[in-house]
Image (tube, rainbow, N blue to C red):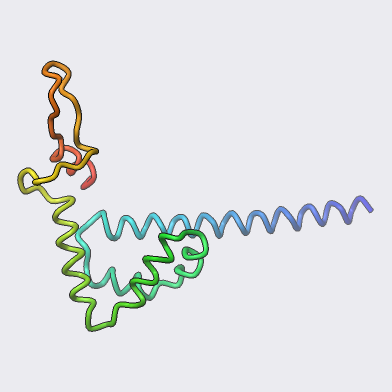
Length: 132
């Protein structure tokens, strides 16, 4: 009887290990998605690669955000991918490329100057941190 219990426990560990590996693979894919679309300016190759990526089923089952991204990528007709790329590049440039002060400073970049007790914008520094 003890031998059967040990085999059952070993089987459960293997199942748990498989679940852990699957979870880590999905997490890796999610991080890679962020790197591909935020780490550098978006490219048509990245959009097409992610549109056809096999991990979407697993990502979608774990996250509402992933379901939304998958749905939006799948709904875009092939001929409109250039429009999607253009809008993604505009947004990327707005968020991550230097080019002077933005008219609306993100809350994340607002700090109080200790000496003057006045709001000061650190938008450029935050933008540079995100670009890294």
